[in-house]
Structure formats: C-alpha cells, structure tokens
Length: 143
Image: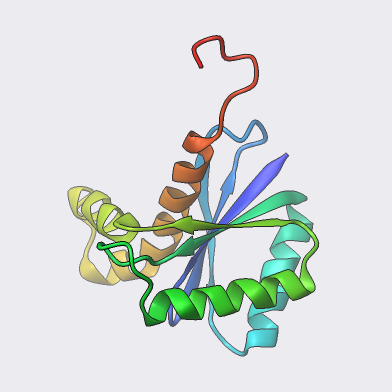
C-alpha cells in the first residue's frame, strides 16, 4: 500500500511517496505546472504507476489558522482532483513545511539553484511524513 503526497507550488508540484508499509515518505519527483488537464493527468499517471491508495495534498493554512488565497486555490485544485480520481484525498495542513525543507537544504549546504530544484519535492515529503506520523499504527500497544 502506497500513499502519495503533493506540495502544490505555482510553478511545480512536488511529489513524495510512502514506502510499502506507509512508515516513511521519500521524495519522488516534481511535475512542471502546465495546464490543469496536464497537471491532473500527470498526477493520475503517478497514482496508477505506483498503485497509490491515498493522496495527501498540502493545504497552505496561514500561521493564524486562516485560509488565504493560496489555500483557496489548493482547495479548488483538490476538488478538481476529486472529479477525476476515485482514491481517498486528504488535505493536510502544510504550515512550515517549506521552511523546514529550506532549513534541511541549507544544512546540506546546497546552492540556491539546487535548493530551488528540489524544495517542492522535499516539502511534499515533509507533508506526507506529517500525515503518516499522525496515523495510529495497527498492533502498537503503546497507543
């Protein structure tokens, strides 16, 4: 069972994927934004290729908990995804995911140009990992 996570950027969509046990998230790829139809087709193709059963989509909530224009655009995109996909789609609060990704990349001493190429993918992995960590584990006697 795999879960795919998305970070919706204005120019690219970062994509991450869970391992088979849905314990960890790894960066997968970036989709260069084009038309809505092409963006949806690319996502649909990745879901099919990796046999994903859920899709987690970052929702950029403001720090004060309100939804700004970016969150509204993400919600519209999520509704478009629901029109063409049958799997479960989970909007996920992505506050600070890009900040965390930037910090990780800075600590890795990557140049600004290299950071720009991978930030959306890493943000998607951080979003997806947050979702994976929030799920109760079956058979975990510590819960």
